[in-house]
Amino acid sequence: MSRESASPRRYDRIAFLSSGTSEAEQAFTALAVRYGNVKPEGADVIVALGGDGLMLQTLHQFMGSGKPIYGMNRGSVGFLMNEYQENALRERLAAAQTSIVHPLVMRALTTAGETVTARAINEVSLLRQSFQAAKMRISIDGTERMRELVADGVLVATPAGSTAYNFSVNGPIVPLGAPLVALTPISAFRPRHWRGALLPETARVAIDILEPDKRPVNAVADHFETKNVARVEIELDQATGLVLLHDPGHSLDERILREQFGN
Image (cartoon, rainbow, N blue to C red):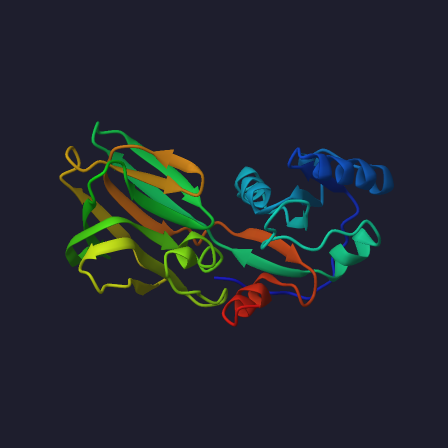
């Protein structure tokens, strides 16, 4: 699922991206003057200035490009970001640890017969659209595992995303290097005591919506939403690797480990 490398690399050509807030724009101007700023397609590295929302957008934008992404926190949360400093940026980039994250791929069939494909770095969530709880059937690798889940929804999270929405609905934190994905219910009514499952990273999850007209459900891959789904298939896209850079001692692996101890 992830690996880290300490091999030094040169990052001479830097492309800076800003979230657009005043704080991020000030940082963008200062850093561009100091280090230069090239277009992303010609860059050795992308430096994202903002919060976790910008980091997710940047990872989606450059998915498949192989370009490493280094974030500096100019936002509110910054779990995926490094500390903001103007000094010695190229030295920090050369010393940074590399994490490889694989996204989920979602294939959703709508009640109108349309097929929608999207990828998610954090999670794919299925959410009820109306006042009534959703009814769903869950299959893993073609075998039915739960005939009927009655809940506000259900989600599949990557290790990188396990500390986000998944954790807020009482899902497990998954170490970044673990070959697992988390399947977590959202406010389950029946089975009342079901808390979800940890699945191998090779698992193919299929969720069929029962009574989709009476109990409509949306599917959301990170920020990409598809309404009125009838069936959703989710699996890890192991052919696509997203490259994140973090300062030593501040790696994504380390951040996830700290989360488990409340730090």
